[in-house]
Amino acid sequence: MPKMDFDLFDMFAPIVVALIFAAILLILSFTCINWYCITQKDDLTIFEKLGARANLRLGPHTMIQIKRGGYASTYAREEDDERRKLTMTSQQQQRMEPLLEEDNRKGTVAQI
Image (cartoon, rainbow, N blue to C red):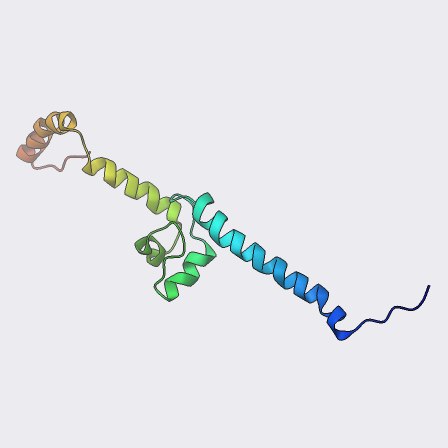
């Protein structure tokens, strides 16, 4: 079998294949995984942290959550609790009114 001669073009083939693989992996991780598999209760992603520097939203979390930093799962739980408190049904509000009035007369703060 004769000796194989490799040109410069042949030497760059593995590098080109590795770059194409990395580009496909980056595109898949940014589009599919970052936007469809990450929920509001998950932690911040690297894309979101990098985008916050340029004031760009690059993920499912709001800019307020990203700028606040920390663990977004903790903040999402707190925000859900706040939303539930703010969106009480009319029956719940009617049940709470006598308790709040009684606490106001006593001078204490109601614990909801």
